[in-house]
Amino acid sequence: MSTSQLKSVIQADGASPGYDPGLSDAELLHMYRTLLLTRAFDDMCIKLQRSGRIGFSVPNRGIEATSVGTASAFRKDDWFFPSYRDFGVGLYHGVDPTDMMHNMFGNKLDTSKGRQMPVHFSFVDPIHLVSISSPIGTHIVQAVGAAYAFKQRGEDKVCMASFGDGGTSSLGFHSALNFAGVWKAPVVFTCQNNGYAISCPNEMQTASESYAIKGLAYGVPSVRVDGNDIFAVREATVAAVARARAGDGPTLIECVTFRMGGHSTSDDPSKYVPKELFEHWAKRDPIDIFEKALFKSKKLTKKKKAELQKECEEQVIAGVRLATDAPAPGLEEIFTDVYAELPDHLRRQGEMAFDLAKRKGSADAGDGAFPL
Ligand SMILES: Cc1ncc(C[n+]2csc(CCOP(=O)(O)OP(=O)(O)O)c2C)c(N)n1
Image (cartoon, helix red, strand yellow):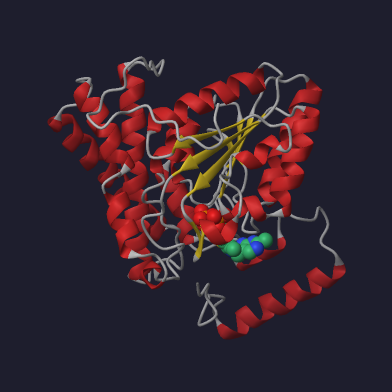
């Protein structure tokens, strides 16, 4: 393992000599399809935001191999604590893009009943994907807590926590790694080093030689891989999950990748990312790299590629239709699902809100709708 050298598996010509992903042809194609689905979902969310139909999204372009490669190393009954820039994690394990779209629209069918920001997915079925956290780093601690609980209960589940380069400056990162290192919690930490934390570049984020090296201080084995090479991400994560499941504790994996877009739909990256960087990384598109590997090993044909692309786009469009048609959550949902018995002050606030909605004839979000 190395914390400074970058491990790649797929070579420039698409070959990956000596590497066996341990996946059937169908599983490899599922991995590829998930990359396409992730991109189709991401592109659609940006269009929906630009046309004013949803309030917000978080571009995933460029990060897809890190998300999907990581997810592919886990079992369905493991627990996932992903970053917001991680659409591929749920999609790999069978989360329906329509259910993710319900969250993007904040409608009544959203698992959080419209009470979360867009991109803040949470699922208990088909996998445990714990609600995306807005405050940076908080979910890393949650993942460690859950992992330690599984260990205490004698369950062989592993937790996955992913976060950005900026996340490594959070208190959550340091306390989580420390606790996990001492108590050998079965958790895998994936740092998506995508170059920037909003507009803050790596050289302003840390004076360390890498993000992976930070794990060593906590006694956490750490490795740095090419995050645009899905096999490199998967290989490191398979090893980390095996260690965790065997009771040997956590691993930190730094995936070196690049955010091929803004931080969110609220900023303009051309103001702070040099265009040469985009040009450089455009030549290292993670889907192109995997496609090359699949073509080289004759697991993919041009016809199959076109079929899968169409299928994914249609699946996302169908999701948009269903999410658009779903009703808005009822006003009463603001007051449900937290207290078994509503405290008095909230009951009074509810009565005021219902009364106001009745007098105005509607409780629809107006100018105060989510503005980001
Ligand atoms: C505790 C906290 N501080 C600041 C913010 C504002 N904020 C939102 S995203 C972000 C950048 C995070 O960057 P990184 O961890 O590298 O993830 P990336 O967005 O690049 O995937 C910041 C500073 C926040 N959400 N939470």
